[in-house]
Amino acid sequence: MRPSWLIAAGAIGISGMFIARATHENLADRVSGEQPGTVELSYYQPAPGLGKLISLGCAIGMAGCLWKGLEPQSETQQVSNFQSSSLQPSTFNLQQQQTHYLPTAPAAPQQFDCEPEIDFDVEPQSQPVAQKTTSATQQTQAPNIFDRIYNNIKRHIFIPSETGGGKTTLLLGAIEYIHNLTGGTAEFYGSTAKETPWLGLEYQKGKDGQPQIINLDQTVPSTITGLLSRLHWLQKRLQARQKERTKAEQEGRKVNFNRVYVILDEWLITLAIAKEYDRICNLSKDRQAPRSDTFNELVALIESFVLLGREDEICLWLFGQDHQVQNAEINTGYRKNFGFVVPARAGGMLGLEDALTGKSPITTPTKGKEIFKEAETLVAQNPDTGICYSNIYGHELLIVPYLPDIKRKRIFGDSPKESSKSKVVQFPKAVGSNFKPDSELEDYWS
Image (cartoon, rainbow, N blue to C red; front, side, top):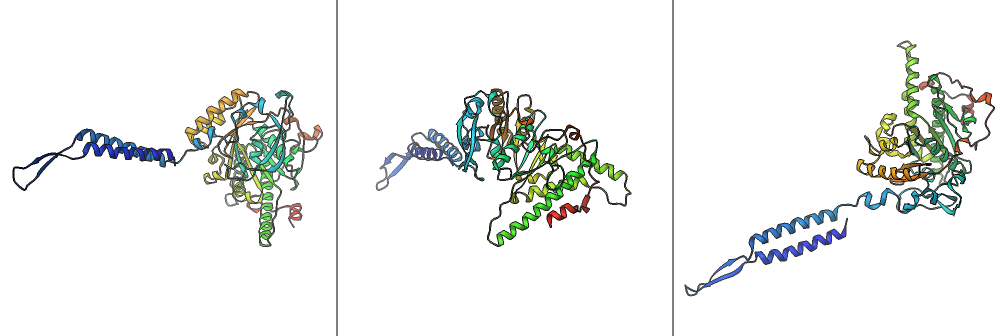
């Protein structure tokens, strides 16, 4: 509602009433005394045509002002440049904005309806960009994309990224930031269909006894069964947390679970591997035998985390080439359960453009075009680093910190010997709907 337009409507209405009265008022023309005791009056209007025209114009003007006055303000007017009020124009100057941040007490901006953010004390750096620290926790700017991801009230994020868009830097920077922020209590379990560094996670084993990062191989579709086994194990953990939370609520106590991040890289390729595995298995089976349905089982497991994981701190990150959830085989109705983060950099802007202005974009096409135009300007100003669009805290364009050494870091342990790096882990056949945890899992959950 716009009070100024309502006041204008009232002023036009009152003015129009007086003007119309002056031009339409009947004035006495003649008094006839030809017949005694009888008075005849005739009337005329000073300017009837002009009066009607003015009345019509006043009516139209008043209606227009009322319409503008009652129209709700758009997001563009409420939040300038599609950013939070804390994001000043100088944020887009990387060299001026790169600073050290130390976590202190939580504090959330008032304009956002979400969980408290981490407040920071700022200590400016005088070194040039190339000489700055490469810690994702220390080197960033306000507002911080890694902090946005950590404090995402929805917990789950969908990250569409084309090749060269800066996905790896965003992923590794977020893992390092959250690992340091939580004191190492957060758990990360991932899968990928291509070789990529994971800060040393790729050389570790998870609590389920499987590699922390499961490598999927398109030439060996049976590797998908390792991911399926991992997701079933995580589903059992989710169910155990649900029971523990319910019991705590009944007893009047609060329970805090460590965050568990399920990171599925190259999700569209992962789906293709599951389809191929089903095809191969079903070719060699008797028609009367149960058919392999790894693909649908995989999708059902993912959707269970999307719907149930938020409250019990099971967080899902989906990385894919396409921003449309229906192409990721996720029910389109679950789109609202995700926050979207779309990375981009010089030479890798098509994914961001498609997400903002393409078919079924993340935001409205008109607003998306404005955001993308602003993103092009931001990338041109910072060609050596990446940016990202995020709708977690409203429409924001944020700079991804300059982390040139992030791919060489090993914060989760040392690398193994070269001879074991190329070792391929073979997984059993699909567990299907008859999944039964092995003895190690049974002991764990007993």
